[in-house]
Length: 150
Image (cartoon, rainbow, N blue to C red; front, side, top):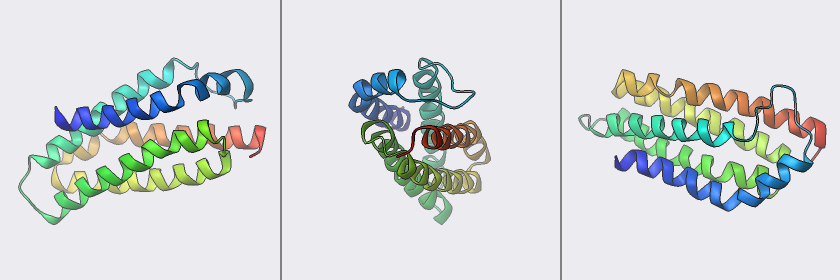
């Protein structure tokens, strides 16, 4: 439960910091096709953070090994990147920088999933929804950048 709480806590903290910025974004910013309604994002992220936490817990419970250590370090690093992205996108409205940051996050998350999979195959596989959502988020981010500049 600690790993799930850690991941969910990071998401909650970021969400609280950008709450007003998201409202402004929803009203002002032009969005690309396939943009879901605002309520979808917290629902999806709640599930994704839980899956990250479950994966990290499964890896943590395995015997110590280099892949286990790398996976847990990457979990922490990608979680920090994950925390920063909404601040860049929503708070700063630096859409180009956010797209680059998100590409780095996607790379880190993919690496984390691979390392999780080396330690515990299900832990790596349950990161697939997260990776797919990050790809979709990159599409949305690039679309917002192209439609709005910045």
